[in-house]
Structure formats: structure tokens, C-alpha cells
Length: 342
Image (cartoon, rainbow, N blue to C red):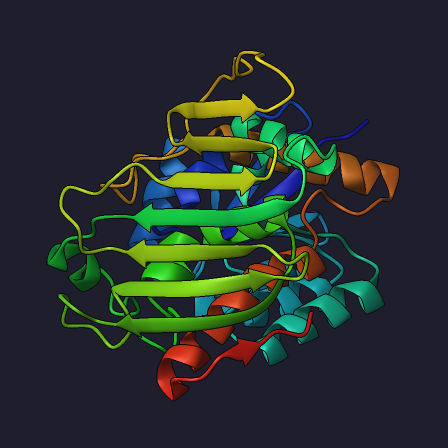
């Protein structure tokens, strides 16, 4: 079985995580790097002994020997690159979020389906054992009727972080702040574990940073299964706190964070929490994050292509977190409860 050849588009902060996962997979080959700044593309290419670099992704897409495009550009142009890649017959491995508007996400999903290519999206927290164990316990009914499902996403990003790239902290390309960029992983995870959200009421604003978008947001959520919850997201609390997820039901409680499971209690059992390996992320740094999930998701996309099945996280699944965040923004803007339809 031949190796599938990847091209990375966008050589910024997240690209090395994609490159490492691709280069480490025996069924993959990193064949090209694209960035509008040639120096960035060249630097990443040299690190992974890639000879082909481009400043125009359209030129790269003309190649017949590229199988998968890894999308690492600013969030607001994910759709542009994904759609172009799909129309060129390439599969896509897209960094979070899927994009920043419903219209663009819908066009991405429609195009990959029409062109019969695969779209895998990077919400790597779904691959972590603590999250998987929590979701399994919920689905098995171990907690009984669910009461609360909360996500606490308290990061620290310095003023220098926002100044490091002109698109950060803008509505046009970042699509939002603490929730859309950093917190989207946690927003995705809590609804993946607890269930789809029916409605939200929220506050959000740039309380500390001089940016267009929010650096702090708080939302009360009502899940379709009747449970309530809170989502807190910020990038302005020093030094940044371990992200935490709490799920409470009439018969049990599970709490876990970046470093593992903190509480695993059920009314009908005194079992110990399962031993889980791996950590999620560092709340204080944009680069000190685990690469484990990228390894899993790259491999899953390769297998999905070979087996002609959907990847673990499809465009349809990935769009849910963005739709929830957009509803939070709408509620904060209007001062009204916002109902979701997904």
C-alpha cells in the first residue's frame, strides 16, 4: 500500500503539530509546505526535509501526486482552502475550528460530499482517554438523569500573543476570541460528551485585551436532554488554569481536567477512576500542547480513505461547536436567549 502524500497549507504556530504527526506515520509522507511568507514555509520544510515549498496553494493543488491537504491557515480562510482542495480532488485535514460562519461551513461540507473526498477535522481532545471514558459512562447511563454539564476554559494569552499575527483577535479571520480560538476544543468536547445544546444565554466582551473579539465569555446552556450547564472561557487570567470539565447526574459525578480524572463517583458503585494516560494541554501557552491527538487523527483520516468511510470527526460534527459559539456571541450581543438548530 503506497504512502499518502500530504501538503501543509499555512506554516504558522499549529503547522509543526501537523507536520510531526504526518512525518511520524508510516503510511504518510509530507511532500510540500505552502505559506504566503516563503521564509516560514522554508523553515518548516527544512525541519522535515521537504524540498517542495510554495507561496501559492493553487499551484500546489495542480499536482497530481498530492493526496491530502492539511489546512493550517487562519480560521477565516479554512473554507477557501478546503473548497479549493476538494475541487482539485484532494482529501482535507482541517485544523479547528471548521470555519467561522455557518454559510462557509455548509459550503465546505457540501463540496467535500459532492467531490467524494474525505474531510477530517482536528478536535483532538475527543481522542483523550478521560474524555472517552466520560462519554462512555454517560452513554451507559451510569450517571442517571443528567443534571449539569460544565466546561471551564481559562487560558492566558499575553498582549504579545495577539500582536504576533495580524489576524489574531479579529472578527474577520479569527472569528472570535477566547471561545472561537482557544475554547472551541472544550466547547466541542462538552457537547460531544453531554449532548447537543438547545439554547444559550451569554455575556462576552474584551475585558482586558485591546482586541476586537472577546477575551472573556460566560454562557448558561440548556441541553436537549434537559440538563443545564455553564461554559466559561477566557484568555486573560494569569497564569492560566487547568481546563476542567464537570458532568453531574442524579446517580454520579465525573470531573476531569488537563492532567486526568479528578472525580469518578457513582451511587451504585465504589469503583476507582480508570487509569488514563496523556494530558490535554497547557493553558498558559499556545505551543505547549500535546501532539497525541494529531497522531490519532492523521492515522484515522488515512484509514478512512483506504476504507472509504467517514473520518472520526466529520465536517458535520465539527460544525456543532462553531454553531454553539456563534449562538453564544449572538446572545451576548442581543441580550436574549438564543435557540440552536443543528
